Image (cartoon, rainbow, N blue to C red; front, side, top):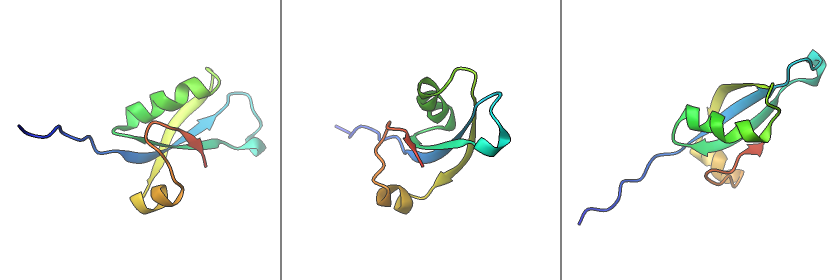
Amino acid sequence: MPGRLRRRHTTFLVSVTVQGSSPASGATVYAVMKPSAAEALEAVRPLVDPSATLAIVGSLSTRIAKALKLKRDEPRVV
């Protein structure tokens, strides 16, 4: 009996910019471990204002994700 397939997770960095905020306030960046970028965006969307703009701005290495003690499916502000 073959073992179940494991989906590889990547730690995506998701930038959240609120419409109408001043440029000086900047963006908030979340780190989230998900198999795809689309799933990472959907994980952060319920946590922010509906009018906010979300964008994938990068990723973190496995080493850094472990150092930050990130967990799967648990978005965290970085």
